[in-house]
Every structure is written in structure tokens, then in C-alpha cells.
Amino acid sequence: MTKSDWDYRGLAAECYDLWFGDEPFWDQAFFHGRIRQNGGVALEIACGTGRLLVPFLRDGLAVEGVDASEEMLAICRTKAAHLGVSPTLYQQLMQDLDLAPRYRTIFIPACSFQILAERDEAFETLRRCYRHLEPEGELLITLSVPWQDFGVERQWRLRRSGVRPSDGAAILIHEATVSDRIEQVQHIRMRYEVFQEGLLVQTQLRTHRLRWYHKHEFAMMLESVGFREVEMQCGYTDSSGTNPEAELIFIAKR
Ligand SMILES: C[S@@+](CC[C@H](N)C(=O)[O-])C[C@H]1O[C@@H](n2cnc3c(N)ncnc32)[C@H](O)[C@@H]1O
Image (cartoon, rainbow, N blue to C red; front, side, top):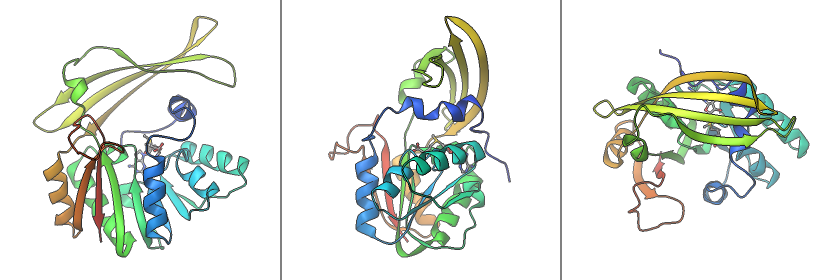
């Protein structure tokens, strides 16, 4: 099985939380509401630094997490300890997901499912999600189509910027993309740069791929591995479902 090329190490892990600001996050109320409504224990796949998982534990929800990156999980544990909670975390690839518990809710926010560039990995992950849900359990996956990138292929553009609290260094991320619209795979280069007192002191280049899906295609994928009552909504606030730039939120039952 091909392994993920989205490794969150070094600057990518260290800086991750810089980009999101403070609570409430754009998707927090939605996932909080679904997990509370479903009851039982939830699993966040690709939980990273615990952007959602840590506040959910603080707020009394029962949520466990799984992620590929040891460094992201270490940050998650530290953040949780500051809030006096101790998360149950597993280090696994989602395409290899193999845990003993069964969950009422499994959620994959922030479009992390699209990290799986190979179609067989994507199907295997959906099959494993199905197996890890209790009967009637709910799967929540968010996806997006990189529409805005199609017009600016092969151009370096500023993707994110922030100031590292530990030393005041300015961190910039530039991104250049090329999209294979037949295969629905985006090839991405990300250039991380750290500036101290105006001088470039560190740089890191990451290359990776991202696969995108469309509404009916993904609904069929979910149904083909056994999910039922598949629904989709566009974005967290626009209930009309007509904003194609918004995250596509898939909701499916085991
Ligand atoms: C965009 S971050 C999302 C983190 C968190 N869910 C959030 O919403 O802030 C993507 C995460 O996916 C993890 N990841 C990458 N490939 C993975 C894989 N194949 N299986 C599990 N996690 C993976 C990375 O380590 C990273 O923490």
C-alpha cells in the first residue's frame, strides 16, 4: 500500500496551529453538535494537534484521535495537558486504521481525507471507517474542490503567514500548484520560510498531492462500501447548498 506523502514534521507540525487563530473555529460548532447528538464515543481521524479534539474533551465530549504524525500527536498531548485533559490517541495511517473500539461517530474534518492521493487508499479508508462504526453510527467527512487554484497554476503565491510566539520569527508559506483535472489530483509545492530580524534563517520544501471529489462521485463511493442515508451539505452556514467554494460536508450512516 502506498503511504501518504503529507508528512507533518518539523516546521509543518510546529507551525500548524499558527494558521487557525482562536476558537471558535469555523467547523467547531458543527462537529460538536453532531457528536453530542449521536452520543457515545467519537473518533477524529487525522486529528493533528487537536485543534478540535482538545476543546471537545475540555467541553466534556468523549472523543479519541488517530493521526499519522508523531510530532502532531505530541503537540496535541501537550495542549491537552495544559487544559487538564488526557486524550486517547493512536498513531496510525487512516488507510491502515485498525483499532479495538467501535465508535458512534467518526469524523475527518479539514478535508484531510483528500490527503489520500491514491483511489485504492481512499476506498480502503472508507471500508475501515465503516468497520470501526457501531451499527447506526455516523461518518462525517469534509471535502473541497480547489476551484480557485485552477486559474493560477504554477505560480508561487502566499498561502499563509504568521508570527511564531516562541521567538517572534515571521513564518511565510508560499504554494504553487498544478492540477490534473482528468485524474482530479492536485500536485502541490509548499515553501516554508522562517525570517528572524528580516533574515531568512530556515526554509523547507514539501511536495505532495491532493485528490478532489465531486458530490455524486463521493456519494457513490460511500454507498459502494455499505454506507446509507448519504447526505451532503455545502458549508457550515449556507443551508442552500449552492456555494461551490464551500467545504462539502458528507454525512452517512453505517
Ligand atoms: C490538515 S491536518 C488536520 C488536523 C486536524 N484534523 C484539524 O482539523 O486541524 C492533516 C493531518 O492529517 C495527518 N495525516 C496525513 N496523512 C495521514 C494519513 N495517511 N493517515 C492519518 N493521518 C494523516 C497529518 O499528520 C495531519 O495531522
